[in-house]
Length: 188
Image 1: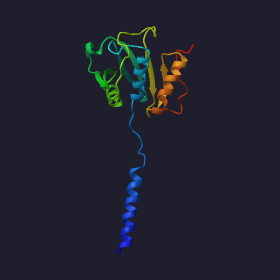
Image 2: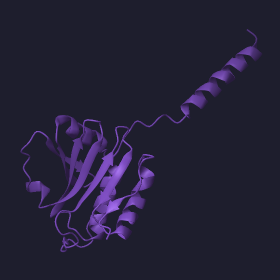
Image 3: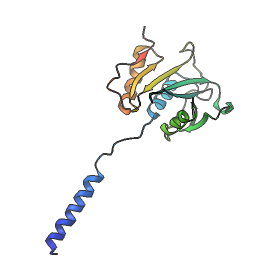
Image 4: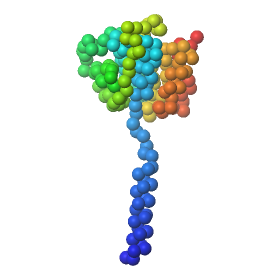
C-alpha cells in the first residue's frame, strides 16, 4: 500500500472514533438528586434543624409502571431511628442521612438506584433554631413519574409563589413529560 492510502485510512479511523466518542449517548440514568437537593435547601432556608429532623423518601410503583415518590420532612433524629422493615434503609447523602422506604423490594431498589452519591454539605446557619411552624400537618412533596421516568405531576405543600420558585430550581435538571401541565400546591 502506498503511503497516501495509509494516510487516508488513518485519517478516516481517527475521524470516525472522534465523532463516535463525542456523540451524546442516550441518558438512561434517572436521578432524584435534584428533588432531594432542593427539598433540603428549602428546609435550610426555612431554618429547619437538620439534626432534629430528616428527609424520608417513600416510593410506590403502580401497575402501569408509574412511580409516586413522596419526600417527607420527618421529626426526630435519624440517628435514633430503628430500621424495623427490610423495605427501609438509611442512606448517606452528602453530610446527612436520609431514610428510604419502599412499598415493595422493587420500590426500595428503585430508590437506592435513583439517589446517587452527593458531596454536598447541607448546614444550618443557626443550629439553635428549629422552625417547623410553616406547615400544619405533614410537609410532603409528591412527585409522579410515568414509566419513562418523566415527571407528570408535582405537588409541593407551599403557597403558589414559593412552589413556582421550587419548580424553577428543579425543572432544568429533570425530564418532564409532554403531558405535564402545572405544579399543584397549596394555592388558594
